Image (cartoon, rainbow, N blue to C red):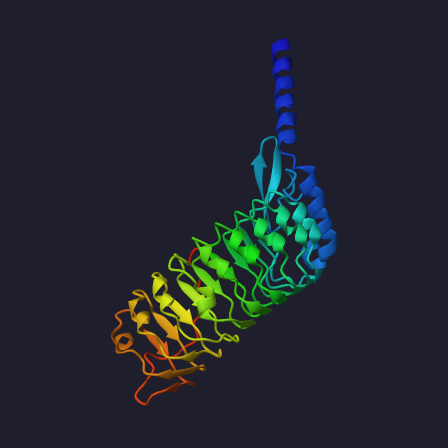
Length: 326
């Protein structure tokens, strides 16, 4: 009888110990409850209970993903998108120090991204597109050394693109289009060895391609370069041929001029080339018409010599990030 009683006590002890081990770290519980208080009814109705990771009887809050870390659980992902959240960026998010993914896209967030964003040292994916965020980008974003995907498009950010973005060694996808950025694109972005997709279209950027592509070993992994609908000037430098992995070059609706360098023929994987609505002159190199991969070359709205013609059927590209789909 004593053995049975001892065994029962041991089981109770292990059960209690198991519950203790499943506790969510207080820092994350406090942060999520602060966020809950600020986000309004659209989120609150799905966030039941005090523990965002669940308490055994209640499930984790919708959009919250937790992981075991030692004796506690921590919040590693927060996805609250397309629920019409109104108001400033919830600064309490920056207290979730183990976040690897933060997705608040397609809401109505306003104001700046707080500089405290730099505290999220484990963040890999930051998606804030389709909001009403504004002001300059805080240079502290450059402290997110593990970031691979940065989506800030369709907001109202202004000022220059911070050079600190070039301090993100793992960055693969950078989406900054449809904002109000001014100044030159930092050429230091060319040092990002893993960058595959750069979209800064539909801003107020100036400078030239020669400013951006200064040396022969920049942008070694770049596949897609979207610079359209800005105020870029200058011509097409021969250095473009050094972008050996480039597949899409989108330069439409700028203020570029001069001839089309025949060096473009040497970009072996070039598939889409949009030069329309600039001030280019001269002839189109014959090699571009014979290029084995080039499907689309759109040249309307320039001053090319008679005989120059487009290739393929012009269409607006909608490139899908195949590594990461929402």
